Image 1 (cartoon, helix red, strand yellow):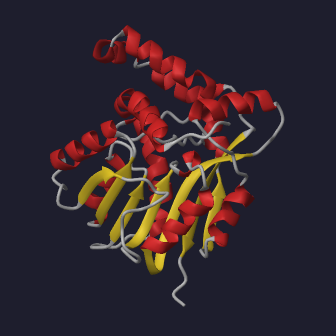
Image 2 (cartoon, helix red, strand yellow):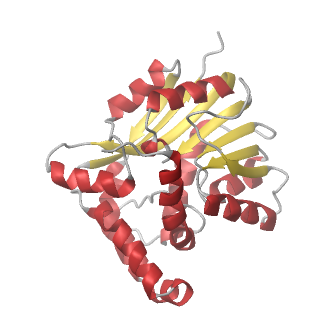
Image 3 (cartoon, helix red, strand yellow):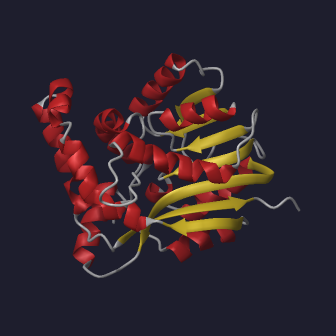
Length: 274
């Protein structure tokens, strides 16, 4: 895939986040349904991923959290409210920065959650600035994952924690389907679970927990389609036919792979103290 710059990724999310923000309640990441009979609304299914990933951090009041790829801010606002942590969210999307700061102010946590433009390839923070780092489906767009993990390691204090989640390659069959998926999401690569673990380990992290829950995430893509279609008229009324059509067109390739081709990994790691 051709080299994708920060401006391209910012535009990618500027174009997609407004409708996704509305559809998923301020979160632009994936969902989690237990089975096909699970009747949880989409927003709740998405929030399950928020909780599954962030619970691995063991956050404590007053800690400093970097939300690297913060989306429209709902995850950071939730963590600030629930744990009393001080969250710094960074994103390449102008829309997401504006919406996240609005959300924090409306939720009464503007003093705890702030959002700004930032590229995780070169974080604008001193060494040891944070107690924890969260990367919820943001590493997928990294042109150089090793450099990003090195930056996370640098800005964490000794003993600081990292939690990240992202897509993984589970089957290389049907490469054309995978190519469409990767192009749609602007993925420079699609690591396996083992490769994700190696990125963290090579940067100096000690991996303490990991899981691959793709069957309940990408494997439930049909439930997402049903949930989204049930709100079509509401989205039409708010955004209009043209915007909704463009949104659907940009996402069509996301559904190209078979269910068993795309996994979803959650990894928790720590920066050693010594």
